[in-house]
Amino acid sequence: MNVLIEFVSQPWAWYVSGPMIALVMFFLLWFGERFGVSSTLETLCSIGGAGKKFSYFNVDWKTEIWNLVFVTGGIIGGYISVTILDSGIPLKLASETKSDLLNLGIQFDGELAPLSIFSWESLATIKGALIMVIGGFLVGFGTRWAGGCTSGHAISGLSNLQIPSLIAVIGFFIGGLLMTFLIFPLIF
Amino acid sequence: MKFIKYLLIGVLFGVTMTKSEVISWYRIQEMFRFQSFHMYGVIGSAVGIGVVMTFLMKRFRFQTLEGVSIKEKISEKGVYRYLFGGIVFGLGWALTGACPGPMYTLIGAEMPVFIVVVASAVVGAFAYGVVRSKLPH
Image 1 (tube, each protein chain N blue to C red):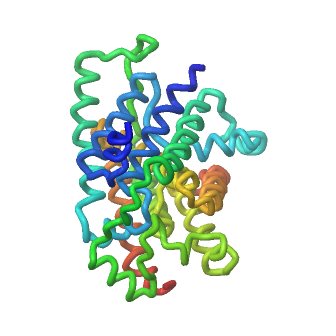
Image 2 (image 1 turned 90 degrees about the vertical axis):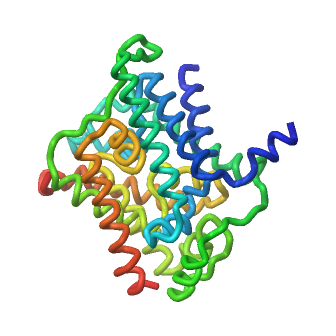
């Protein structure tokens, strides 16, 4: 058992992770659902009563509960990964990325995300709060406008050879490159 | 009880994304700077297998647990909503280093502050629902 836990605890290579994500998609299709996380954001609005004033949210959210259960599993999976399955091996970031980020004043700290930006202390600063709040807002707004996120468009949609998903993924990259190369130098 | 299977698959999803560091802000930066193959390998191999799997499921009329054909992701035609919505999403993805799946997972991966990012994303989804009739689709 310990050997197995140790084996699974190593950082997973892309050729393990990609097939596992495909396996997750297989199970969801087999269960009669679809793989797409961002619709949960909308479901949360519906549960919160947004449907009373805005017909867009006036849907039968009970048929979407499975997806909220799925993301709850995701949260638990995240916890298991950093506790029972923690290897203690720090993330191996490309040295070019390290030096590019250092030029922006962001020191690589070996965490999943830089604690200098993503922590409660940072949330108490104007800059940190703006990054988290505006960033989250853009993700939520954009994903509903585009009708899907990385799971729904890049993985499910491209797997089903949907042209709209390809356009969305191109959009994801345009936005990501604009943020990384034009906006990051202005805010960091 | 019928939800247990979704919970377990969700756990598998969360472990996969965390152990392969897909939920890392640094890995997303590496991806947008084209400095590592990792993220392209993850998404590329998932899509490669997904294409074959979806094709075979449709070709051989694979049945779900309830005995019906699979739900396909079918998007209505159009360009603007996918392009502009995609760009807005991409801006947020690079800034927070997390798309919706990883955002939730990070809360569990001892980064609880991401609950603020998820809450903001819910507000963003709500804002879209409010102004959607004024946006090009």
